[in-house]
Length: 271
Ligand SMILES: NC(=O)c1ccc[n+]([C@@H]2O[C@H](COP(=O)([O-])OP(=O)(O)OC[C@H]3O[C@@H](n4cnc5c(N)ncnc54)[C@H](O)[C@@H]3O)[C@@H](O)[C@H]2O)c1
Image (cartoon, rainbow, N blue to C red):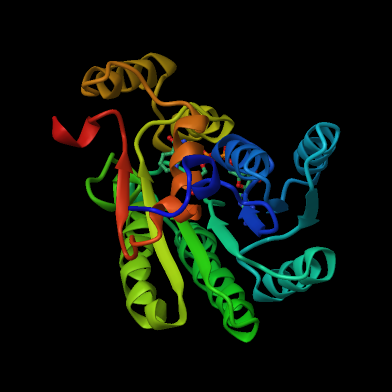
């Protein structure tokens, strides 16, 4: 029998979270849910304009939100974001590694620069942000929660995304490896593998695909329809449907889950 009530299990008051890529899309929804649950949240994102806008809108509702311009592929930026968070709020209890890029392109056209950009943001950035946050959690002698946003592409390729699929496969394995390594120190590491979620990034990726693969808009629309037709729930997801799962993993309701990847895809991978 749990000694905590349901509201207590999901209460993040007094906790501090960092959400990478929190300026828009899935990340912004995660910022909204974690701050609604009472956490102070730092948005670490390369998009200053939308980050400041998110901070302003949520601060007006009485939430504790800060923004720091961060390119997660640069370790020096990660260190600045960590120090900024400690200075503003005193500790780091939750890290959501959400920032990621998914530029569709055929493998045969991919350059070294294309490969490095995706791996540096999605895999290297996720690792070093996690490492630096975990160091602070361990120094502060308190438990911590890491939530990585992976993708169904870590499990099943969507097509024309070999660099992305490789990076997200790495995120899933990194989740397991760090969960094993840090369990005894009370750091829980989990991941979410979203399916198709309607976000600004997903909309832009269609345009990029048209350019990179030389596809026509009608071909992209057909691919989109075929993707949605495979989803048992019959529709793409919305960012809040990922944010509520991130809230669960960041909360005491998930106190005995570590190393796990939760697929949130409307059943896409079943078909
Ligand atoms: N949308 C989907 O269908 C979908 C599906 C599976 C997984 N995902 C994953 O979810 C995460 C969020 O995706 P989204 O659709 O909300 O994307 P999005 O493009 O709408 O938002 C991504 C955010 O990350 C930020 N970002 C990008 N590069 C960055 C960098 N180097 N440093 C810091 N911030 C950076 C952007 O500025 C933006 O605010 C990504 O990791 C993505 O791979 C998305």
